[in-house]
Image 1 (tube, rainbow, N blue to C red):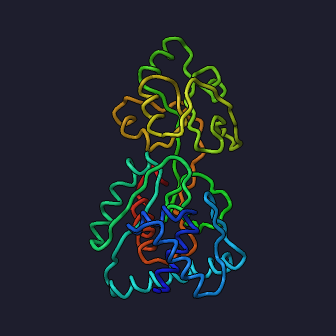
Image 2: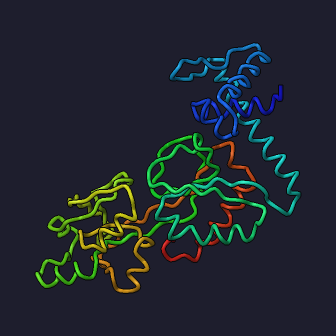
Length: 304
């Protein structure tokens, strides 16, 4: 039995909760994966997992072994990577996650420049506006926008995201002609608003007054969505007003197709973090990408 391989297999079975998922990862069979875990249990003289036709659960011994095994697997992988690349070169896959809009409109050029600087690295980029479990998906580092929930993930703040209230040029012209263009945040209650559901506040939009205090407005509208690209399209289609990161609309604002409303009422920026599972935070590729992106975003007016 290859004990390291069996340990790696056991760790991924626990992380994914599935023998079949690990079999697909390793281009193997479910039976072969099950045999590896069984051989590891026999070697250790302890039952690690309880199995039914539908569920997997760690035994008490399995729970204690899993945490040490996951740490050891990560350390061995990193040690091998350092040995292969020497002191100058990074090698292998970096599994990166981001929201769709940020990935397409902000992250993409920095991924390209990172790959150009480190030709031995390959990036597996997963874009999803919803929540994903980094451990289950095998993600090394993820970009997270907004306040972070308490978790075991290791976070590094690398900037903040400016936001604005926006509407299409045609919407603004029509509202101006009617004399209903919003002048203060409270006026938004009389307008259809597009709500992005992946943030905790959702339809509760906040502003700062000239004296520095906060104003919160609860808005309503005909459309809510968990996809930032749908927010962008809906604004362009004249569906209503959005409260959105400026990077999602900056090109349209520059061309005059979308206009910023309530310019005298500052909006609250969102923190921008890179997060990693604890066992990946010291990986050289994670550190290198984190430094690369943090440096690249220093001069990004939309991310500071």
